[in-house]
Image (cartoon, rainbow, N blue to C red; front, side, top):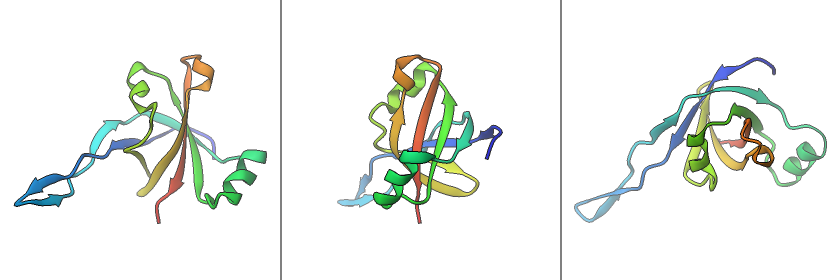
Length: 108
C-alpha cells in the first residue's frame, strides 16, 4: 500500500440508560494520527487466514504517550476509507516508544 494516510481511532462509549433501557452512545474520537497501512506478510498472514481474519490491515502509527491508553485495545476501532476496522491487537514494538502497530479486522 505504502504512503501515510489519516485514520481515526474511535473509542466506544458505554450505553446510557434512558427509561430503564440501554441506548447506544456515539463513539468518541480518540486520536486522528497519520498512519502507514500495511498488509500482513508471511507467517502472520497465514495465521490470520487460519483464524478467519482475512480482511485485516496493520496500521503503523508513531508512538505518543496517549497511545498507551490503548494497551488493552478493547473498546477501540479504526475508521479508514469509510470502512470500520475492529482492533484485535496493539503492538508497542518492544517498548521502544517509536512506533505502535495496530492490527485490525474489517467489520462487515
